[in-house]
Length: 422
Image (cartoon, rainbow, N blue to C red; front, side, top):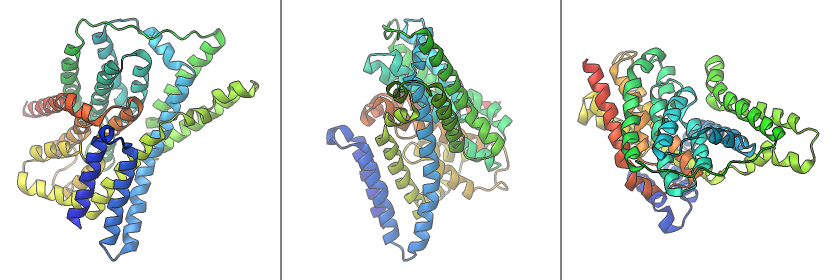
């Protein structure tokens, strides 16, 4: 059964990669793969009740990610409906593609550390679609956003779910991880930024036509933009104060925005009120991308329940031994399977007596598993979200971006090791 479940997973992964030649939506393939993996798992054991319990446990974790994604995407979509992004794009005066790329990358890197890499990728990718008309340009800029978002999230305890897991688990402390991973994370972002910048040297772009807003509409757009961004920034604060998972903070923010918008348009005609509602924003969300994410996470959780990920971690320990080699391998593997169960497996394998709090192994693991996923478009939550918004092709990303992302990944590792030696 082990060979069968791995075969199904690989076949599903290939079908996702060949989405366009096969003319088969990746959401359908991912859902089928996820359900088949769990079907094989439950048929291979007599203890059906235990498998169902594991499925429901994993589904709870998956649902928290999906509802977070749904809430964040809805808030961003509502800001767009109010032309909030038009106000931001109007402030960007440069016509140079290189300068714009640097502005986007730097904003993404630091915003990712404050919010998280998923929310930041959604916000910045949505912004890019409003600034650039050329699809090829948007591809390169969006890919840079994915790399920068994952890099920025790695050095912050709130920026990436794996760093948060290590922080909550007591493997790292907030101040220590920021101090020790800032420069390596910056290297992960900076190397790809320099490579991609070279592609756009001396190129100019025509800014999208400015959106004409009345004084009333502009006032509403400014208000919703500021409120929307503030409520997104509120999410990590809510998590820190209440210790509830991030999706609860997003749902709180969405509900507050929903109530506010309802009051703003309380006395307006039905037709106008309907256009600016959260209900309308929800209808514009890319639902297939959310279902795709559901399928992928279901498939990976099946591998975890079957014990394949644990076996993989044990094999790496036995064959590699060196903590840096193990961390690097797990970082590369995190591009193929979700980094959350990989880090969870590592937390289960190595206790604090083996590697105490703030040991180099934990910090290195946070760096590699947080940034390794950039090498494949579906290797991180940020990549999946950006893929859904900008409709990026898996193979195109693999051909053009993977080597660039890996160059940044290698640079981050080199800086970390040099920093450790010094």
